[in-house]
Length: 240
Image 1 (cartoon, helix red, strand yellow):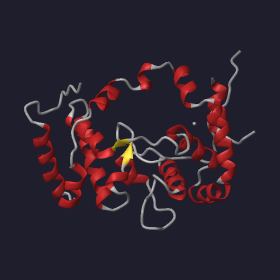
Image 2: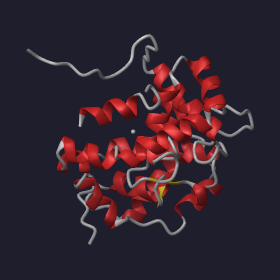
Image 3: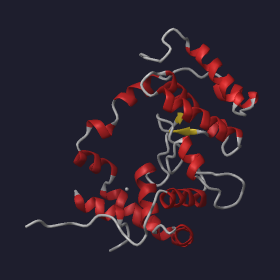
Image 4: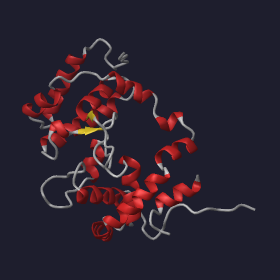
């Protein structure tokens, strides 16, 4: 078990709808109307809002998933086996070599070792293969309307609308996890605003499809979160 953590972290050293919504007397449509007003006050255009909320309704499956997150239902060993299989480790090693030049460049700029960038990429989306198929606006609206963490997801929803307003991604392409995490780095909208970068300089922070932006954003996230590249992670210890 420990071996798999060490290998992934050091990849190439030798990753029916029942709502308890806060306003129980408020219909979803009324809630959306109220949210749109708030969004417009924050600078979101009516055209973006109309497009983003066209046909949006609460998604029952999202509430089910929210109540059964694997981090809370699996043992650590079960979770690790699922997230860090040997096949992912092998694939990570190959991709580290294939993207060596870009990863080295990003590493030198942000002070984050390439193997950790690739490890995060691998754990989050299997190196961009599984980025989620839920429409982000509908997912966040479902969770914001539900009562368990309404304030958090309402904030994330408004930030997602700002991403659309800024033109980083088209609404139809803004897909992610059931919880609204987006792109190959699985950033929540707040993380996107705080850490995503336009590494290739094309005017878009494209964490969905541009490797330079994906790697740069991951490295920026780690760097600004206090990363220390003079240290590494995970070493076996034998107790007497």
